[in-house]
Image 1 (cartoon, rainbow, N blue to C red):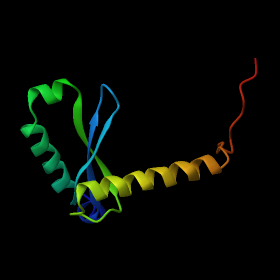
Image 2 (cartoon, helix red, strand yellow):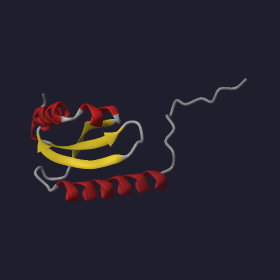
Image 3 (cartoon, rainbow, N blue to C red):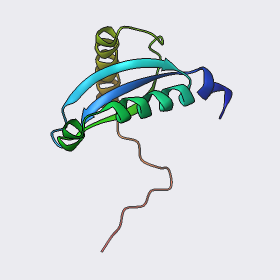
Length: 104
Protein backbone atom coordinates (compact mmCIF):
# COMPACT_ATOMS: atom_id res chain seq x y z
CA UNK A 1 0.00 0.00 0.00
CA UNK A 2 1.31 3.41 -0.90
CA UNK A 3 1.58 6.25 1.56
CA UNK A 4 -1.06 8.11 -0.43
CA UNK A 5 -3.52 5.21 -0.12
CA UNK A 6 -3.06 5.05 3.65
CA UNK A 7 -3.71 8.78 4.09
CA UNK A 8 -6.32 9.44 1.40
CA UNK A 9 -10.04 9.69 2.02
CA UNK A 10 -12.35 7.07 0.54
CA UNK A 11 -16.09 7.42 0.14
CA UNK A 12 -18.11 4.24 0.59
CA UNK A 13 -21.03 4.43 -1.79
CA UNK A 14 -24.17 2.31 -1.79
CA UNK A 15 -25.36 1.51 -5.30
CA UNK A 16 -28.02 -0.74 -6.80
CA UNK A 17 -26.57 -2.82 -9.62
CA UNK A 18 -30.02 -3.77 -10.93
CA UNK A 19 -31.63 -0.33 -11.08
CA UNK A 20 -28.50 1.88 -11.21
CA UNK A 21 -29.92 3.91 -8.33
CA UNK A 22 -27.36 5.45 -6.00
CA UNK A 23 -27.98 5.13 -2.30
CA UNK A 24 -25.40 7.87 -1.74
CA UNK A 25 -22.33 8.02 0.43
CA UNK A 26 -22.66 5.95 3.59
CA UNK A 27 -19.27 6.87 5.09
CA UNK A 28 -16.00 8.65 4.35
CA UNK A 29 -13.00 6.82 5.79
CA UNK A 30 -9.27 7.63 5.96
CA UNK A 31 -7.06 4.98 4.37
CA UNK A 32 -7.82 2.37 1.76
CA UNK A 33 -7.40 -0.62 4.09
CA UNK A 34 -9.75 0.93 6.66
CA UNK A 35 -12.29 1.69 3.94
CA UNK A 36 -12.08 -1.84 2.53
CA UNK A 37 -12.62 -3.26 6.03
CA UNK A 38 -15.66 -1.00 6.47
CA UNK A 39 -17.12 -2.15 3.13
CA UNK A 40 -16.69 -5.75 4.28
CA UNK A 41 -18.47 -4.87 7.53
CA UNK A 42 -21.38 -3.27 5.63
CA UNK A 43 -21.62 -6.33 3.36
CA UNK A 44 -21.56 -8.76 6.29
CA UNK A 45 -24.35 -6.82 8.01
CA UNK A 46 -26.44 -6.67 4.87
CA UNK A 47 -29.61 -8.77 4.73
CA UNK A 48 -29.86 -11.38 1.99
CA UNK A 49 -32.97 -9.60 0.68
CA UNK A 50 -31.09 -6.30 0.44
CA UNK A 51 -28.27 -7.98 -1.47
CA UNK A 52 -30.70 -9.94 -3.68
CA UNK A 53 -32.46 -6.72 -4.71
CA UNK A 54 -29.11 -5.44 -6.00
CA UNK A 55 -27.58 -3.24 -3.31
CA UNK A 56 -23.78 -3.21 -3.23
CA UNK A 57 -21.02 -1.01 -1.84
CA UNK A 58 -17.95 0.36 -3.58
CA UNK A 59 -15.04 2.66 -2.78
CA UNK A 60 -14.15 5.91 -4.44
CA UNK A 61 -11.10 8.00 -3.60
CA UNK A 62 -12.25 11.46 -2.60
CA UNK A 63 -11.17 14.87 -1.34
CA UNK A 64 -14.11 14.88 1.09
CA UNK A 65 -12.91 14.97 4.69
CA UNK A 66 -13.09 11.59 6.47
CA UNK A 67 -15.87 11.58 9.05
CA UNK A 68 -18.09 13.95 7.07
CA UNK A 69 -21.82 13.39 7.63
CA UNK A 70 -23.08 10.96 4.92
CA UNK A 71 -25.82 13.34 3.68
CA UNK A 72 -23.35 16.20 3.36
CA UNK A 73 -20.78 13.87 1.73
CA UNK A 74 -23.41 12.72 -0.79
CA UNK A 75 -24.16 16.34 -1.70
CA UNK A 76 -20.46 17.22 -2.00
CA UNK A 77 -19.82 14.14 -4.14
CA UNK A 78 -22.73 15.03 -6.43
CA UNK A 79 -21.29 18.53 -6.87
CA UNK A 80 -17.85 17.03 -7.68
CA UNK A 81 -19.41 14.71 -10.27
CA UNK A 82 -21.35 17.55 -11.92
CA UNK A 83 -18.24 19.75 -12.06
CA UNK A 84 -16.15 16.92 -13.54
CA UNK A 85 -18.86 16.18 -16.10
CA UNK A 86 -19.24 19.81 -17.19
CA UNK A 87 -15.45 20.15 -17.60
CA UNK A 88 -15.39 17.00 -19.72
CA UNK A 89 -18.16 18.38 -21.94
CA UNK A 90 -16.25 21.66 -22.41
CA UNK A 91 -13.02 19.96 -23.49
CA UNK A 92 -12.50 18.81 -27.06
CA UNK A 93 -12.22 15.04 -27.43
CA UNK A 94 -8.67 13.82 -27.10
CA UNK A 95 -7.22 11.77 -29.92
CA UNK A 96 -3.86 10.04 -29.55
CA UNK A 97 -1.12 11.67 -31.65
CA UNK A 98 -0.45 8.38 -33.44
CA UNK A 99 -4.13 7.85 -34.30
CA UNK A 100 -4.78 6.76 -37.88
CA UNK A 101 -8.34 6.23 -39.07
CA UNK A 102 -9.12 2.87 -40.64
CA UNK A 103 -9.74 3.15 -44.36
CA UNK A 104 -11.44 0.43 -46.36
